[in-house]
Figure 1: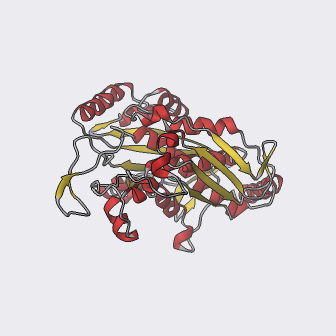
Figure 2: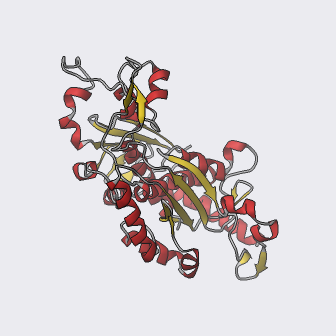
Figure 3: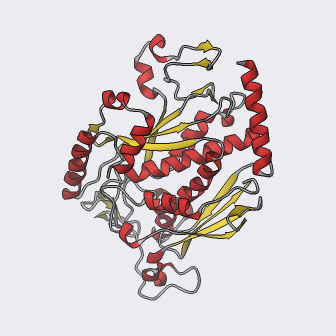
Length: 390
């Protein structure tokens, strides 16, 4: 079983993760992990902290000369800004006499609910762990998972399909190959393949920033090379679509997830939604459409997996909304923390790596082994079995 745990606070000494269940002798390229961490910090609309932090992974165990050992893989990502916060965020010792506490919860954050749940006296005890800064560990975990998937020809990319009220052209996307969409998105400051929409998206972000406001967006993650048979219909928690939705919804500020045609399918007749099945001796079973987004009955069907996630505008506003002081119960404007005007392009990168983790998890459930060679043998035997049925 592949699983992970993370720890760390936004302004604490470091972010930590432990991965258990990786097979032995997987090559892990540290530069590829660091590249994913770098990608997470890019995108038009990011805030000042992205200039402070330059995330680098440091492996602590489970890796020897670049290869996994099959034992738990542990790593840390240092918070470079910690030196400016040590007196306020030290894990040991006593708080300084002049420590100011946060008592004004910000609407849209975990501040109020978490403070009431855990009986905190200082909201900072909640907001530090709830912060989207902690997506750095998710990206690193997913970056390792995608290196595992690449061994088996499975690859991922993401692109923005909407920021605020501006959407990419559906006709343009239909005219491009997946490789073209991926390449264009990687070159775009807002991760879109639509050059005309890019200009309008940047204008929308600038407008929101000038107003002390924020703007959200929708990103799409596409996974290619996924074999038929990952996931299962037999129990709800084994459904691949449910697991993908759950993982994406666990990312800060994500409020909606679609697979394939998603909500648009509810507005169409079944004949326009479902993917007809064909057969020939060269391709075996195949489809010419992918309204299912690569998943039917909770199981991957061999088509590219297509999943979209909607990110709300970041709730930290430079023109803050009304709130209530937890101590005095008097009305105040909510506290302001450093924030982005738009983080949807960065969220797309987080989403990519979150999806990579779920696919790797499901892959190892089906083709598990203690070493990469064993997993490869299991996978090749299964492909032979599927080919014989096709």
